[in-house]
Amino acid sequence: MHEVVIVEAGRSPVGKRNGSLAGAHPADVLGPVMMEVINRAGIKSSDVGQVVGGCINKVGAQAMNITRTAWLSHGGAEEVAATTIDAQCGSSQQAVNQAHALIASGIEDVVMACGVEAMSLLPIGSDAFAGKKAGLGSPMSRTYFGHYEFISQFEGAERIAEKYDITRDDTDRFGLQSQERAAVAVAEGRFETQIIPVDAPVLDADGNKTDEKITVTRDEIPRDTSLEKLAQLKPVAREDGVHTAGSSSQIADG
Image 1: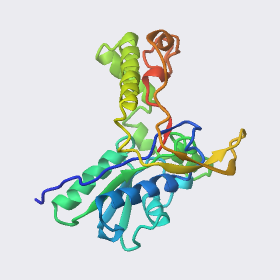
Image 2: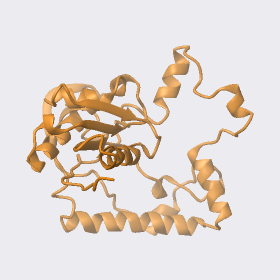
Image 3: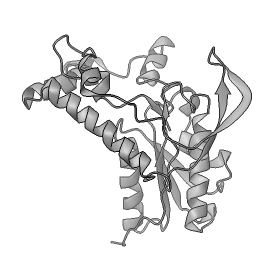
Image 4: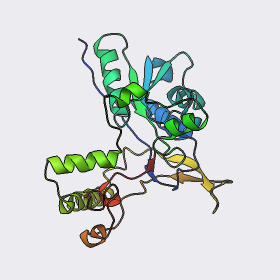
């Protein structure tokens, strides 16, 4: 096996729901990051053997291999192959795994792993809902329901909490700790070297794109909160549940 190393990394800022990145096409969020990472690595885009990207909702603006669309939209070499992977929440992680395997096996010398999701534009389940609405069928066959119960992520999380005796106080404290750690990291400038600025159209009050653009340079998190504020939030899946919006990952663009 060939030795595999990471030579450079970077990311876009993380935009909140309907925030600064909501008006940007996902190709115009991922593409500039790709090119800047290549620039920082001191190589040419043609030196890359393959690009592997993760994306869940491959419909609308993210359809037709968004990884390659982003690559070509921002000057990536045409001869470089690109693949988009759907492993749901682990899509970008699987892109890294596949990039590693391509190099370790000797198939490629240089591979870029990446990912993008425009959740303001394409909420969770957009591909399934759009397909069903267009009369293109359901992603789940009848035989699937003969083997498994279809539940939401939140209901699944509630069942895990029951199994491992995780309480509402546990989840609130975990959520608060996450926000506090993020706030410290931002204050100490820990993310500054990894964030690559992205230009995005400004939206008007009705959510329409304007001719004005802004350069987004920082994450639109964390949010100021407390245990008292978190305790006031209603559970999502069950009336007596333990999971709330305060202990969950946010809807984000990036």
